[in-house]
Length: 292
Image (cartoon, helix red, strand yellow):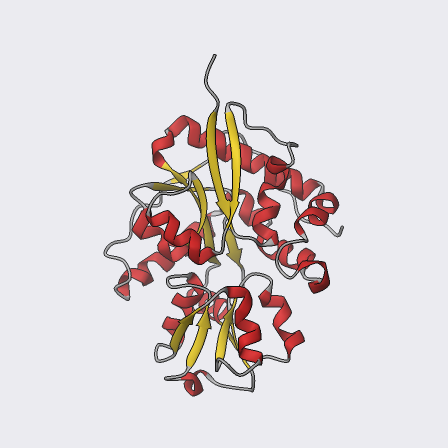
């Protein structure tokens, strides 16, 4: 009898990541031969953990991939993609990018994709790393001149009276003519090719199940992010857990290549690694998150 293997899966404590794994966590989709342990940490923590290969599967900021490519491959399921949107730079009072030169700007981690976009568009801003869910409040209190919004903060910040300086993700998409892969799901290579494919297939089934049964899944994952009081869950999940997350389309893969090339151009990566992408072993018809 084959021994049960423990699989450590890490994702951010936000509703879209929780949506990917909901069916696996609740036992509606199974992965035979594995005992699953789920860990939830902010992206900045997960990025640092990935540098030490701490988890078998983990979410990471896309811009980190060159630093871990020797140890991790990319899963074709679970990518967070912005099509004409992404991290947003906001301020307490109306500001321009030039106003932020030399000023403190909150970012959810260094390196993260939001931080990278800030560096590209406003290189003279002074990034201040802090928990992503405290940035908007810090800006509203005047502790920071501006901040980069990610996760559900993308939808919540107007309620705090904050002003959009620029949608960093939208600007990147417009300049490059491609969707922006903000975050990736990666898997340890030492699990082996067969296991990686089996796991990728189970994750695709999990996401597909949530897309086909959104009411139940959203009811469970709404405790993350701003919670039920934030009233952001459905809209946010539809932005980042969708057809793009199911299969990593060709234009998203191209966007990832362009993004990683830009990190190398800025000296943040020595080389652009090949995109070693693990595909699921079966094709599932796409589903969309319909109104729940």
